[in-house]
Every structure is written in structure tokens, then in C-alpha cells.
Amino acid sequence: MLSTSASLDNLIAQFSRLPGIGRKTAQRLALHVLKLSMDDVRLMSQALIDVKENVRTCSICCNITEDDPCSVCTSPKRDRRIICVVEESTDVFAIEKTNDFKGLYHVLGGRLSPLEGIGPDDLRIPELLDRTADGAEEVILAMNPHVEGEATTLYLSKLLKPLGVRVTRIARGLPVGTDLEFADNATISRALEGRIAV
Amino acid sequence: MILTRLRLTHLRNHRHSEIDCPQGIVLLWGENGAGKTSILEAVSMLCTSRSFVSTQDRTLVAKGEETLRVEGAFQTDNGVAHTVSFAYPGAANRKAILLDNAPLESVAELFGRFPLVTLSPQHRAITSGGPAERRGFLDFVVSQVNHAYLLDLMEYRRVLRHRNALLAAHERRTPQLDAQLEPWDSALAACAVRIVRRRASFITEYQPYFIDAMRSIVDGREAPTFRYRNSAEIDTGAADAADAFRGALERSLHTDVRRGTTSIGPHRDDLDILLNGMDVRAHASQGQHKTLLISLKVGEWFFLNDHLDERPMFLLDDVFSELDDARLARILRIIPSLGQTFITTANQSILQHVPDISGGKALYRVDGGTILAYAEAA
Ligand SMILES: [Zn+2]
Image 1 (tube, chains in turn cyan, purple):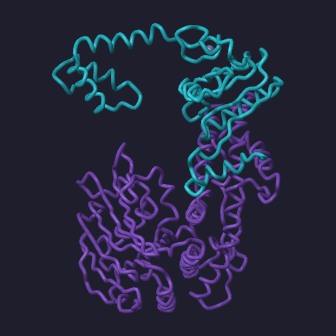
Image 2 (image 1 turned 90 degrees about the horizontal axis):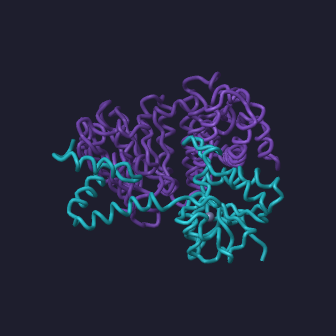
Image 3 (image 1 turned 135 degrees about the vertical axis):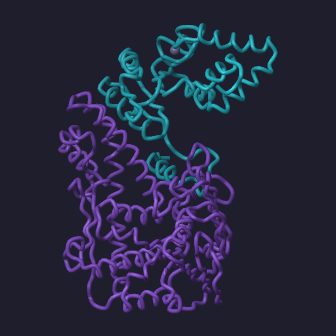
């Protein structure tokens, strides 16, 4: 043990379980907690409990929510004919921020990655197929642009197309504000591949 | 591109070594084990992110030390200065490379910027060893001139690892496995076709350089040729090559599932080198192998020089000791037409034969991990 306090060691061990937190960072965080007021610590621990007690996944779109179904799924303003499939809830936040998308979402909960042992059974694919069969007209596949996202897109499109729905994918191209001369080759190749008529 | 100054800290038997490099020739003379090759390894680490001797960075760290560091000051052909620094271990126990004091996001950013050709005893296996050595040679040269090739190669390897993980997780072929393989096979096929096409066009473009180099080293009309052996046995020039590759994957699937690995693709292809129509691996003499290897590398230098904006640097590690006088004389004659050249030798009598060239020549004696200025001629 590193410290002379079992409680401190325990807190360090708890922080170390979080993703991206190494032993050193965990120690720094634990020592910081020691310096906080009792009120602040109560607020923090209550927040941890609240998030577990109140937040659940939406039984329709699998996004995280406090109310089930979530506010997107129940909103009368959303276009129920379009479903945008994303890997994680964070992707929903990113798309919602744009205010440009008025359809519904489906959160897969990851992407195919045999190297990490993640297969179709680990993703919320049956739920997506049920929803699609239930009156969707277009499914937009919005996976991240790496080989795993690409494989997930292909896998899902094979399953979705026989359902008679329009299957699209988001375009991969140059980031807005990036000049051609500063873009890397892969981005330019993909942007050329995804060219559209004007 | 030239290296103007090189500093090594805790690299193999070097504690702290530092040298100035003229744009012509840097001659490093010393006994075996003195630390000459480590200096060339250092140049290679700066230009390509790795040593040409050891792929394990850990083995490069001086005994009893924690961190090795190599720093170099470069100058482009237009006179622009750059610095590269290589440290191991850096964050997360990986190598940390800084280009002009900014961390690289990927080592891919380094390729082609500081072009380098290395000829060392390690490379003998290119003409005499297994296919992996020749693929390594191909991939290294093509990656320097074609960044998209390097990205394809990296993507191919990642997709391949996923595919192999799927194969290894299944005992036999099932409809579920087929469905799960489908997206990876499709990505693998697209990458494989692009990789093999680029290799093929490289071989066509590079062959004349190889032949020219060979003719400048040995008299005679021997013309070496290449033959690319495609493990998928498909015509990658055809419009439907990706489908044909998928077909080949399908045909080898039963075997692949049993072995838990993918048995066809660019990672299993080979490049035969032929001399008078015969595979040199089985039919070339010792002397022919030496000439072939030097020709491959000299040809590589001229090829890169024609295809990149910067003149490549050349590392010659302990090459002269194995050559007869005639070949040695011819190589020494070629050196002045190459870019900045680093030469190691244990043979003192070689030193006087190295030509004086306009770019200047620096001679260093290396002894027990220490570099001593020996003489300098303008
Ligand atoms: Zn919902």
C-alpha cells in the first residue's frame, strides 16, 4: 500500500478503475478529494448515486435517459420514418448539438471488433431490426470512420437492405475549415470517393 | 536532405556522443563492437522511427540506463532546418518522436520526409532469405514515395488482425462466421488490391534502376528481373480484382478456419529476384548475392532521388570488408554521386580509398562508445 490510510488506498483503487485514469492520476484525485469540504464530497457522492438510480437506457433507442422512453423518442416533432444509427450516446449528443437532424436515433452500444471480442451479439442489433421493420423508411448509418466502424456499417447494411428500407451512410470528407492542401491523403481520397454531382 | 548534427544519449554503448556531419561523407572507423553501427542506427531511428538492426526499442537502451535519446539537426536541399528527436521509453512506455519540437501523432508522418537508404549485413536476407524480408524491402521503399500506400498497409494489417481473431475464435465454418467475416473480407479485398497494384507499378518503375545499378557495379550484361508472386493467384490488374480476391478468400476459408489465420493476401506474397531467368535464392553465388544486394540499394537511392523532393541519405554499414577490390573500387566511384553518405568500417586501409568529394568528408574514430574526431578534410 502506498499511504498509511486504508480509506485513502481504497479511494485510489476506486478511481483507478475509471477509464483513462492511471495510478498516479488516481492518487492526485484522491488527495484532491481529501482537501474538499464535506459538503462538496456529499454532493459528489450523491451525484454518483443519482446517475445510477435515475439514468437508464431508453427501451426504444437505447440512448441514456431519465425518462423511458426518452424525450427524442416521445417527441411529436421528430420524423419517425428516419433512424440514425450511432455507436455510443456521445454520438447522439454530437449530432443533437447541430439541431439539423429531426429523425430518431438508435444507439448500438459499440462497434464490431473481433480483436476485442466484440461481435454482433454484443450490440443492440435485434432492437434495430425490429424498429426498422416497424415502419422506418430510411436508416442512416453514422459509424466512426475507422476500420471497425466501416465493418459495422457493412454488416448492418447487409441485414437492413432485405427489409426494404433505404440505407444510407454519412459522408466522409474534408472537415469544414480545412483547406485541401492541409488535408491528409486518406481524407482527400475518401472525399474524392464520396464525390457528388452539383 | 542532410543531417548536420547528431547527438546520442544512452544508446547501446554510447553514454553521450555528438558529431557534426558534413554534407558529403561521414566515415566512422573502429573495431567491431566499438559502437559504429549504433551511430547509423541512430540516423535510421530519426528518419524512419526505427533501427534497421533491432525492432525492439528496449534492446537499444544502454545497460543500466532508463532512457535513450537521439537528436538530429537536418537541413533540406533548400536549406530549411528541421530537428527530430527520438526518446525511448516515452509516455505509456512507447517511443516518443518530436519533429521540430512537436510530438508526432503517427510515425507515418515521418515517412518520406527524411528519405534514407540503408545497406547493412542485416539486409543480406533480402536476396537470400525468406519472403518477409523482401516484402519488408518493398513496403519500406514504396511507403517512402507513396503515403497512401503506407496508410493502406496499416489499414490492411488492422483488418487482417480482426479477421484472424474471428477465424481463431471459431472451430469450423458456420453461417454466423460467414456473415461476420463478410465486412472484414470486403475491406481486406479492397486494401489488398490497392496494395498489390501499387507494388506492381513500383516493381515496373524500379526495375530499370536496379539494372542500371547492377551494370555500374559489375561488368557484363546480366539483367536482373523481378517476378511478383501473388499468393491469391489473381490478376490484380483486372477491373473485378476485389471480387476475385474475395473468391480466393472463399476458396481458402476451410484451411484458414482450421489454422486460425489468413493464408493468402499481400502479407503472404513474395518477390522473386531472377538472374538469367533463375531464382537467385537457389542459384546465385556468394559474390552475386553481394552484388545484387548493393545494386538493389544503390538502385533504391536513385529511384527515391527521382521520386522525392529531397535527396536521400545513404548508410553503408560495414559493407566494404566483404568485397573484392574490383567491386570495392566501383562502389567507391559511385559514392560521390549519392547524397550524404555515412560509412562504417573496421578496416583502416579502406580510409585512404574513400574519395574526397565537394561536400566534404569527416573522419571519426569510434572506440568503446566514444567518438573521436580523427581528421577532417574539406
Ligand atoms: Zn429513445
